[in-house]
Length: 196
Image 1: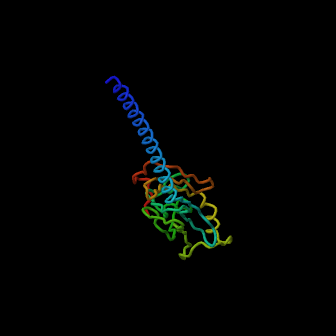
Image 2: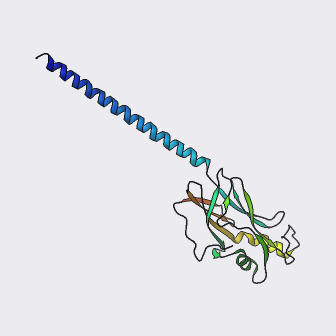
């Protein structure tokens, strides 16, 4: 009986040692699993990351474009268009601020609620002359000259999301460099929202 006590103590120590080792192995496996899940999530995010760009051009005609340069679709949630820092509700109002009152024509394409596929580019607005033709490059046309100069007064603020519901806000246009910032929530429609 005296010899049995050290054997039981030895067995208990071995059991504790095995339990500690098993716990450490389990924790290591959990950490590896969590890190693997994190890396996979980052890979999925990178695979569906949209990058919107807004720009204006004067060739072959004056127009404003929106393009998705990312690898995933961009879901447009909210749009604000400004002229001289003041929000406008549609392109007609934008042209009135740029060119003055009167009948201003143009062709437009909806941005709000649109899903831009990866690599998709769309002309969102093209101003037209009184004969309803696009303002083609023509330095002798006073309307083209004015619109070409004043198009830099137009700025946009576009909130868009990826398919994982991660959102960003693009601020672009004018003569300042565009910026994109991560946004936790997209704004609700308001009086300053662009209504096409």
